[in-house]
Picture (cartoon, rainbow, N blue to C red):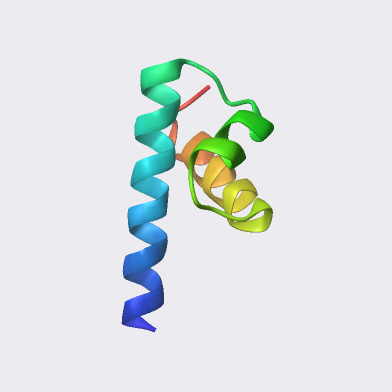
Length: 55
């Protein structure tokens, strides 16, 4: 559980950094640039939107 949570948090941070750097939430660009699967990416984007970190 802890290992998976840590991996998820690292992926979430990488996605957030990528979005802020490139200014895009285009799924295909993120998927091609970062090692994350589609379901995890959708979960991360949803959480970031709910937290107000991305629009």
